[in-house]
Image 1: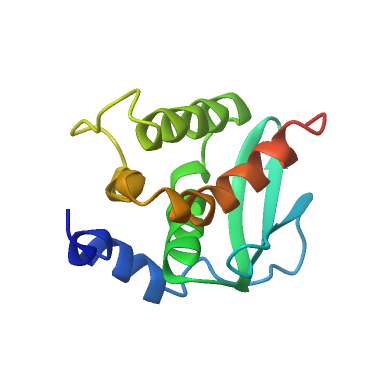
Image 2: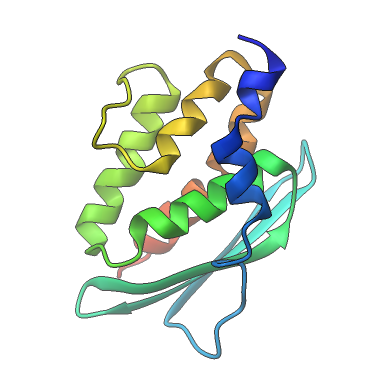
Length: 140
C-alpha cells in the first residue's frame, strides 16, 4: 500500500469539508481528546435527545487523518441512537484492527481501513472515536 492510498480521495474530501466543523450554539454533551504524539486535539459536541444523537459536530486542530476521521464520525453517528452509535464505533475498531472487512453497507469511515498498515497513524484515526466513546460512556 502506498502513501497515496492512505491519503485517498474520500479522506481528503472529509478533511477539507467544513460542514460538521463548528461549535454549536448549544449541545448536551462535549468531550475533548488529545493525541500528544502528533499534536492532534479534537472537541466533539453532541446533542442527545431521548437517546438519539440529533446533532454532532467537532472543532480542533490536527493532521489530515484526525480531522477527516472526526468528519466521518460525526456524519456516521448523527441521527443514530446512542446504542447504534456505540455499535458503529465498535465496528470501526474492528475494521481498523483487521477483525472485520468493509462491506458495501459501511459508511465513509470504512476508508480509514487504509491506515491499517500505518500503526503510528492509528491514534490519529481513533482520536475522535475514542472521545465520543468516552462521552457516550459517561452515563448518557
